Image 1 (cartoon, rainbow, N blue to C red):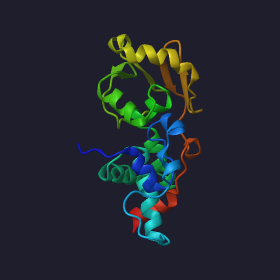
Image 2 (tube, rainbow, N blue to C red):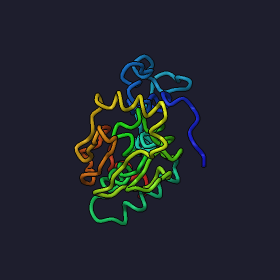
Image 3 (cartoon, rainbow, N blue to C red):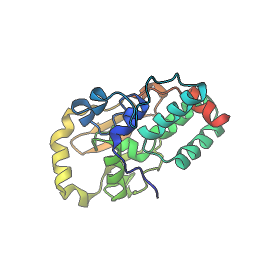
Length: 207
């Protein structure tokens, strides 16, 4: 599968917003604060974005934040349109329910890319079964834990020491003694840390 290989800080500069793609490192070493202009040659005064440009920027912010390729995001959008309610809100809720994102939200990884790697390497157990598919959608009541063999790794041992300082969104709970997470309820758009103009994303795909 294709994946993004450039510097992740370029994505924040391109979006003109801190997307927290490197986790806690973005709080201490943020290139955007020193170089707020987008990457590439600077051609004098920047022109005002058109409506189409705003829609594209908002769509890209969503894609970058969740580490998706265009085809993946289109598939999630198609699923969001089939569900009742507001399509933009449905899209964000679906993306929040991805297993790699939940692993990150639980504090088991410092960034989404690290969480995706943990899932792909088979370290995560979902409802008692090893699951190595990052795009798997969690449901209310699901239990996310660590595979027994993975508890012997140095990463897991360091995580146990540092998990106490990490916060968890209200729709999730963590038993830090067992290193086990639970989906209390499905997330809402208000639970998302980074805000998007979901209406612009819907307009982009509905043109």
